Length: 449
Image (cartoon, rainbow, N blue to C red; front, side):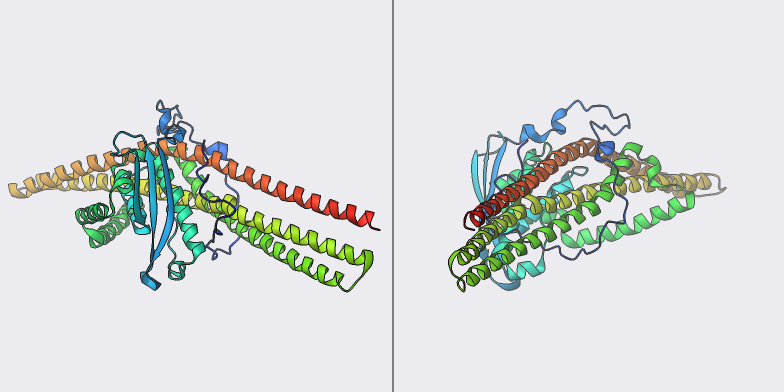
């Protein structure tokens, strides 16, 4: 399986600057998550049977990784201060027949990537859409070279993950993003936003949904029911694991930041130590002066190796860990959406029961007007249609998740193992190089004594 971070950043690239420095709570006192193998949804089909899914392409994205070659490059800063933004050149090579050309080159900015991410979320409920890098008002205002390079790499990871996803790679929105000219794409974004009603409509929908959720929770409280009673036990097990995983993974990322920072400082200290040794040697003479100088030279050599390794770890270890944290948040978001869909289905069923009771009372009331009975029948019929619609939405999410969670877990397991292996190799190489340097110094010291 191709490493999604391959070619995204090398040791010589600008430092990968992290902005999440606020989480200082440790997880040492919390119980660890269960063994990963115990919650793997291998071929999970949503029925609890754990049967293998016949369509293996939904679980193994490696078959789709050769369909695209996408690069986000040549960032250009525009403006200053709050109005500043960066544009990126997005080049795409593909053999998929729905694309007009096999090679395209377009200019996009962060808000265009954000639009694509939101569209993929809205049109693929139940699918774990790859995450975007976080927004940072402070970093955006400063717009440093490190921040721009960090975001460029993260955007490249996002777009390549979306393009190699077995369900998302055929998305019309992805195709528009990759091949439309800047003017055409801006027009398409404006048109789509008008169709969705803009931000005011979304805010109103969110407010109405909040009241519906409150009503649903009240109904559950009165009836003594819980949403999980209708969920599959295998899914609940995976969901609980994912919910715990984020905190533990975030703590590993935080500690990796601290480790790399300390290693970088150690390299700087080693350089200063070496310079002081060379300076001290100038006040001596003969063999002793040579030994001070050689020690200083070795320390300076190790300083450079340590600094280089710190830069490499930022790209090959810290950055992927940060992306893993974002990916787990995306998985949690889909699980929350599933819970919301189930809640709406249960609320719709509750409404049907209430309207059915109302209709029965009206029919049993002597002298009631036929118009009121007919209106109650229409309300019941509408409520039953709503149940069917919400049921279809929930079942679609469940079906997609049963396929995508398996893919997500397997890919992350392979990629995280590769990241840990690269970390071990880097540490072993530094230790070996350090050992050679110190051994050579011991040899020089002995021969010159």
